[in-house]
Length: 366
Image (cartoon, rainbow, N blue to C red; front, side):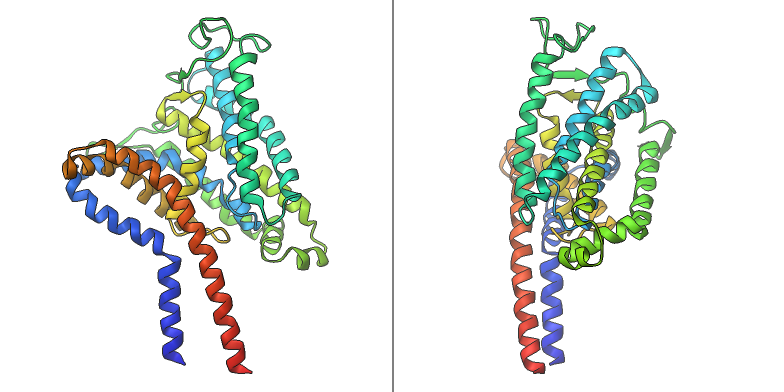
């Protein structure tokens, strides 16, 4: 019996961590082939860890509430981008500009999160696919606003932002006024490697907030709702309201995360930056070993490191292996979508296996 349990525990561990194990092996294979120096890789990983971590952290709250991966986080990303467009037009520079963009984005993100949460409460058990489709719907409204309303109904004064026809925002918006204003707010250089300490402080504070939030009354309610909605409702927990609040919080945090993401890059791709942020953040979380039902802070940071490490080394590894750097670009797209599908399949398979094992154990005890 003990041998069977040990074998099952080993299999369960391997299946629970199969995605990060695969990426660790791929990275170990690709890093030497890419021929990048250690200082270069460290610098790139620090930049990307600062760039993406806040966005990935915003996914944790709905998972606590049992709502799975919030594909609707792109709604918050859109709100953040609208704030950045307005700040760029008003020529508000540096940290004040970034703060103003967050203030503008907050009510938009709250409204969009409220709408998303209300819809997801009517689609219990199908939250992920519903939020994914909802993202497409709101993306259409976002395109309408930035392509037609900005410059016509919403005044835009900067000719650098507006299309030549007089309305609509250009495909790329230069965020030179706020570029790296948070990353290098506190300038730190170690052995020639610049550390984005300002952003890491914000990420550390947010991580501490997540740890604290889980211990609050609302956090405990979300955990209870995530485990069993009917039992939670019987215990007097307002299930629908709790789920709604989790989506609103996630959407607002995604707006802030997108602002941090774009100040790191320095350029806003007006019409599809939000789409990439959503899928890449979810893929990074899953690569870190998270599942639809459970995600932790280590999953976030391990996932961001492994995901972006493959993004850095795969083009050069492809070039040196077969002479085609474009292979690495295709691999990026394959990874971002494929890992989501793989993680969801493994999660469902693991749930079925654990249920079957529990039934066998029950019969054996009986």
